[in-house]
Image (cartoon, rainbow, N blue to C red; front, top):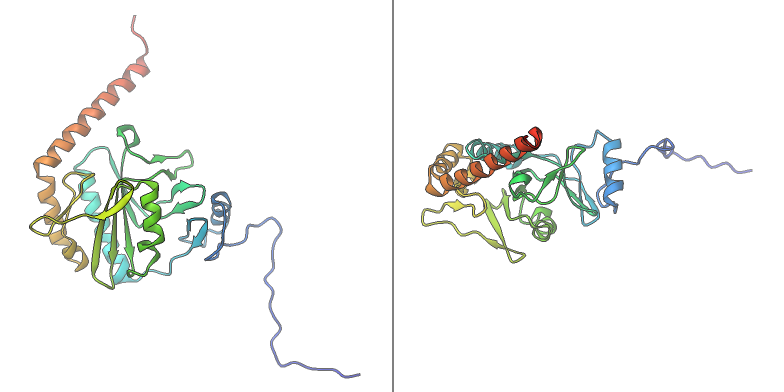
Length: 255
């Protein structure tokens, strides 16, 4: 009788508990319902996205090429929303776009649905539908933010999409026209001006180089513009009308 002894370490097979959802893995093909079930079952997973039915899991974020510009973007959007009623800024929110797509953009700016915004807050406190403006901090032009997600955002109706490609030092601001993204052209001073949110102005070079002071100075100019004042007046008028209608419903018919 021959006995063979192997020097190789025994293969360790992970224990699987019945009824426990398996963890998400990049490349998994799932429905949105199954994606959410697995995501909720594994709180150790900090960020995952479902795009065209495929799971994507971004790598850990770097300081200079992601975290710092991300913070500057949030500051820029927050200052704008503080001076513009009916808007909401979100950082890494879960957004349900359809049954095969659930994304977590780096930042977004949305208009209240009562004022005509395209996204809504669901009963379980997620977003459903396309926000008006989405921003992604992409590592490079090769990142999926610049390809599959860009196509998804256009098809879903995201009106404006900003992508920062940090390795190339490039910023693209796309505007949706007839279902296709076109590059937003800067003005004579090199400033990009949102067409959806009047007064939301951006010095793209300043953002890419980390000059937050210049970014906010240019935004302040947009906030002081006549177009922003007109936009604010329009939003305030609509909010006043909504408040009056809600008050009338609460009081009921008067005798």
